[in-house]
Image: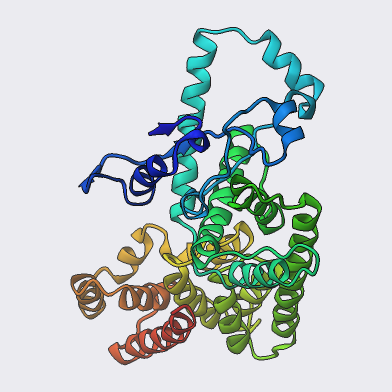
Length: 376
């Protein structure tokens, strides 16, 4: 639904618009298929000289409560604000199939952005800390303090993740890698395009927003790097990987990968223990984390001899009914740790007892439970 020149309407009409924007209701009736609410407004003119020069008679500030319900408040650039190549593109573009293709591209980008957004953890502590810093810095500014409602702060959080998803979708579209940490870019873009004050006739200095953003972002980066420095100092491989898993729930970093690799590569002389660690790590992280190619390669090198199609294992256990029973029991019970223990022990065609298989399974499960607990 689109409202044109929304700030030239009478206050009583704006009151009727409010439930449409905020609740998707008209006279109490829910518009359950309504998804997007857009509005356009003319530049607010509060002084006589600006009114005379702009010519937008009757363009009044928007009610703050209504403006606070729109997630993005975006200023459309004037001709003087456009770069020359953008001006030429506007003057030379034709109409027809090109516009249809552009519309399809936008639909594809929106769908991809929505899929990326769905995978984000909105409880990211670093985004939360960034917003805590931003809100305080804006409110405490001596010359022009800017107060934000709790609703607007929550909207800002959502907008940061929305912008991050859009940037990743655009990066995929043009075939360039997106940085792991987009808060520096997404935070500023969200801040510049999410505040309701300009729609209410209150100008916010863009320089102030940039200054506040940089201070908040640097504070968050300092806190984050302190976590990574502490991670680097942990000596025990299990303690270090558990600390890394807790960080990996919200951020990707080379120090986290280094902790994962260290865990998978120790103890150096005991391949079987490393394979048990690799399987337990894989089971704990497979549905919870997006692992880097470096970590996936380390897992593959350890587990591929065990998790490949098991023809050689079937051959090794042929004619050995006790071994066949152990394997069939683990498969029947849909026990991945039992199946892994069997495959690990049968690799070289050796005979083994039920007790040995149970011991490997129990140790692997113990490692898994420690790792999974760190991801809760």
